[in-house]
Length: 634
Image 1 (cartoon, rainbow, N blue to C red):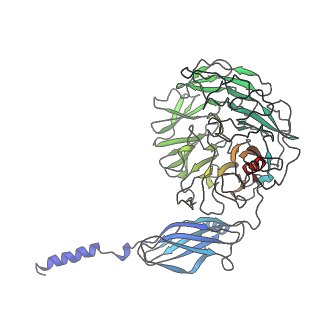
Image 2: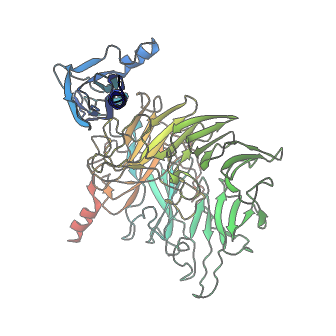
């Protein structure tokens, strides 16, 4: 070849190098999968598939969850024997953008069974490869609507009919607070109102009440202490009651004091015995004291004042430090065991556990990167934290990942600001919020196209994570779920509503999405998730049921007993025939057991029965109290 042929040869070689090759072809992409229109025997499967420039065809595969688990148990491909629809595969063309496809599973060829769990996926094929999408969940609705309430619960009106023309205040409605708490043993609830009723001895800006169940129904006592006029200011001092003991027998009150606008107004407190009305002033040599935490009986209280921490346990205020001596200047307290032996703190992005007996601290996260600490077990053997790779559990020396992703949890899950997270006493169960797509569930909102927030439950014993608030059918959500935070039910962060039962087998949450057909109001309602084998739930891994009415104006979660048998909520709906109107506190009470029949009343110290004389098993159709009030006014 002559000299003149070399440039032409070089050009040919260069063209061959840059030309597309068959072995460089790109496999199709399954960008999204979801299900809509789920009924008892039908559903519509949908997917977004990108052909990636090559002629592509698609199909859906589906089978029951039982069949999929059998395949896994016998070492077969998960979708072995799955039904394929449409058949044969349907062509999509050879575009370079995602195309939405769908297939309706209907009778007679593809009828689904009522109340059955399925798994499905989309499969896309082109000359480069076959791309199966991830397995997604689908659960058909039962042929017969289940009972509206789990565990044969029935709704009882807790607050009195006569409220002096007023109403029960919702969380955060009174000076940014208003103390709301259920007795740990059940059968009693304390709450506030801007109106004084039930034989008031005083009329502070917020009147405080204790309602209790007896054999004759619910009775209410006004426990507000007398005070001078104008003794309470605005937020946050407008709410006299700051904290109640676990049995509601004792309460911590802010002492009233009138101050001039330019005059310092230091806070001081007293303890109230609910049964006797006796007030015991607490020492107040520290100025501007703010409640940090307290023991269940309020026998020990920690206060913060201008950055210093003080503890009261019957004598004077004793200055203490929440941080151990080993902590550095930039350290931050996170959590402690119930007996204060173990203290968890962060420093320079690392999480430490200090042992007060050995006076030694161990670094639980040598790699650093800790973003926030969610919660620790009562004995200090377990702690959950978020780092750059996901939600992690440190369990007795070993670390396992609960959920992957730098945004697996929300900042609201980290105490003490709001702390929407909840933990079982032994640390084996954790409830938290997430806006991430965890566990294969598609949390893309059907209206906004943005991710919705859902409530997740992790069980350390089985190392399983499930979405408690996700639509049971597997359909995309139409609203977010929530766990009440630390500031929702009171004016301090010392108590958070018991959204999770002590054993972690019952969870209460709020949702704007209708998770059941009986929820028809398009408003926020209170739901219960219950583990399989607990109460009336016989469906793995758990059951979802309504707590509030699901119709009319909906409801807000207030609190629950430690075992979850009493679930209190706030509503403007009349859910029993004796309720004439206004905003009230209700209890969705479990009839499965009658607990503590000799429990003592916190307000009267008299024995009361856990079981009421009568419960209406099927409440009347709820009606809007606001509408009923307007009708009476006209």
